Length: 117
Length: 118
Image 1 (cartoon, each protein chain N blue to C red):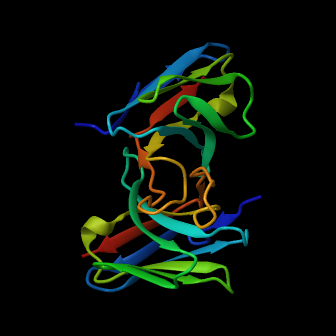
Image 2: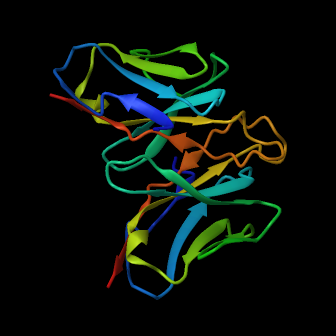
């Protein structure tokens, strides 16, 4: 049962344009969401997060939007740069608000972003 | 300085063998994890230790045994390796458990250990 889904395995965007990566989830108990970026032969690295009490969080070129009613979140990268080419994982956890969730992150399968010159 | 380091990075072995993957973190974190990324790229938690105590134990065959000698180390031992164990195993650490002010819930991952069982 895949509770976090990234239905697009790959995305190709031109440099300077906006990249939009999507993520859907099924577990309504998730209250904290994170995006990780992964380069080949490296471990995932944290990018940005959002709590379920917000609908938007911004950090430089990266913005995450959360639509709780649709159980959907998205990561916007603008402008996209060649160095953004990587696999992006969406992750979610239960208990951020209530505490005691234990940092058990449930990951999606990732979207390979390629930013072309 | 590598924050979360795992050894070996690559491991090729025969079915039936026993192998270990070691993990060490120098971040002062008190929670460590093992994640498995299978051939479908699905990154799934296996175990989590907080202050050397097992707090998360997902449905994993008992051939997999984690051991945490101290807060900075979490090793993974696998007995009687099977073909289906071939995957990339990621160690990670975090500061405390989820929740609480100032804790982003962020995990710091190692570079991964690619295990190939022939």
